[in-house]
Image (tube, rainbow, N blue to C red):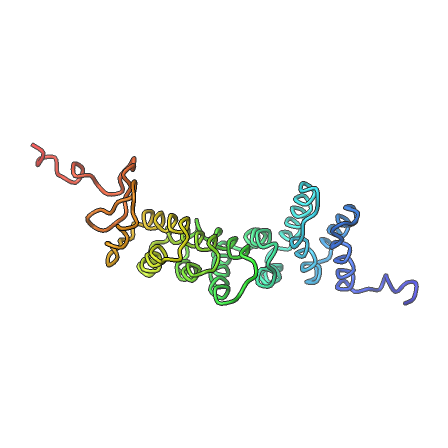
Length: 260
């Protein structure tokens, strides 16, 4: 290599060189910071991928780690929708850094597009083996307070996940998106002998929040219940300590002229 060859490197080659410096977990923090800033000035796919790699590891102290990742978040956000494809690829292929990547994707895409991607990806993720639950948890937690027609179908398979935390987060999502297709899977999870106690508790909470009835399973469900849980006549789960009943009281349901 000649003396001036370094100046003739392509942007992609520069990005690869800077990625090496950015990845020095135990190196001089100023070296990482300089690499991050230099990559931020390179608007090529390789630079975007290099910046995303900063989400895959942590450094000490935690305050510095958060500052560096926040800087990367803003630099990627400046790229706008041109970075979306790389971020989606990152989410698909990396087990670590999902939370930061999803947050970045949210910042550059309309919510409908982000939701569509997450739901579609979850459906694929449920059919593949994953060593870590982090990505599943991040994506399910994102869906909990969102509205999209495919959320229930994207979430249901995770009731069969091997990890209890994933099952619990799937229940939290389904509780807010009650559908008939979710009713029986939630009941079967509740009643399965292998279901952990804490998962059962969340299954009861999901039935209670969603208002889904236990039709066809009443005796089995009642055998599991203890105060404050009980089933009303319609087979809907209720709590004895409800401060505001979910169904109208008899007094509210009766016209005033009939009270006389």
